[in-house]
Image: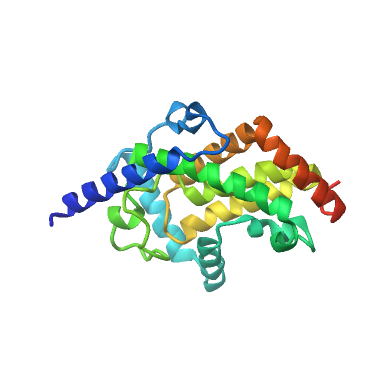
Length: 233
């Protein structure tokens, strides 16, 4: 099959899967799920900004240390709120915090709906499709799902919600979300615009969730639990 046919088939399959999953959004409205209303298109392939992004990724790849790559690979496979354990402090164990675990599961579900819908809408090629010489951490992700970064969306949406629960930790939470997003570039999984778009989308999702009455009911239970565990004021 021609490579373009493979990409087209993958895009259609991804769009169909996203459409089916989008119907299951728990808290976000269709308008809130529509990232196209505030995210600009990614740089056009072959344009000067896109070529600059390719050059940046090659520079990051050339400079990455074994330790940085190991950290990025760990972030690659970790897709839950445990990425914030070091910031939240000892005792932030989701297995021992059921209300908090439920809240973070709420965030994870709806932010993924939003991110998947945006990926299907924009259909940007992954770095290794644009330039096969990239040594990415994995090539298992769908080829037309680069923009926005799903990891960045998750990290920032969770950071916004956790910062609402523990405002004294807000700067450190947002810094960890940024670090988590940057790991995607260290891994060669996303371009810079993908990361920025994920930060914007994740922040918007976090704010929208905090304005949802149904979500705030779960937030109240998590807040009480974190206070009891002395993980939040």
